[in-house]
Image (cartoon, rainbow, N blue to C red):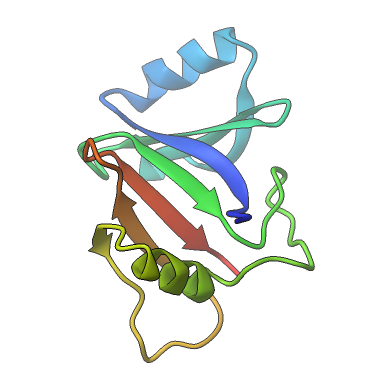
Length: 124
């Protein structure tokens, strides 16, 4: 199953210190707003989100409909189809998409067997 662009979202204590650290590793700011306490850092095709005060733990993130440059792709599985497939496999959900939506942006969160959160977040 294609899940879209992958990134890891890190819950950081000091966004400015984290920004400097990842810049020292060769990452540069790709998106976000440091004044709003979040940045997306990129090194080649690797994406790391830095989030201060937004959530407690790190999250694996997939973006259906996007490539690693956050550009729309034509052929992708809609997040709602992915949710239905995972429900049929009895995957544990932490949050689900409202059943009243049938297209457009939406997201859900599942938990792996160790409780790690995986965000499936469609922006288009």
